Length: 117
Length: 110
Image 1 (cartoon, rainbow over the protein chains, first blue to last red):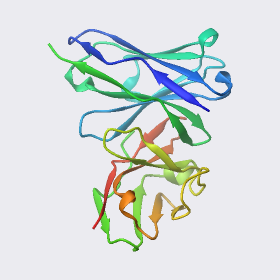
Image 2 (image 1 turned 180 degrees about the vertical axis):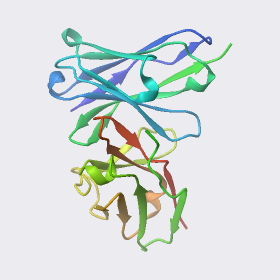
Image 3 (image 1 turned 30 degrees about the vertical axis):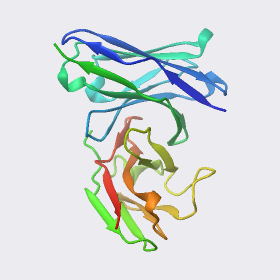
């Protein structure tokens, strides 16, 4: 079965960076884009961008541009999202999700990133 | 890209039908048949309920249906059940090959 397993909880200070990983299994890694979505405490879902594991092409939300970097390592079926210059507004659960047509049928378990001094 | 507009809350009694709207523009909802809907329970990852406007993934109850008219997409839940309680989000592809989520709707089964 399809599985997306994310890295664990992170606590960072303001101004630091965080890199979250998402390891895929149960399907051909290069066949589907991986999207990243975040959810601040008590708030809604926010789309951050996608990466093509096949080509490495990316498409970032306007808000994410210049601040978020998505990469992949096909040898270990893993994608990464690095967020720079963290501030308290970036405290959120970050999810990766497999894109199939317009939907995301499979999601990672979520990674809580807390930004606090 | 602004979030798609959803009602903050919708409620209904068991057995009733409810509809959640998702309003965007011709650059997103109105321009593509790439609208999907998600159900989320507290502390859990979202679950895909509808994709490509009206398609149901395997395993999702046929009580859930989706449609679109112009710049507004809709999710209808018929025969409301207690387990349908939760938050619902729409999302749409946009003209820049990006995606945007809706503001979210809290569904309460009375």
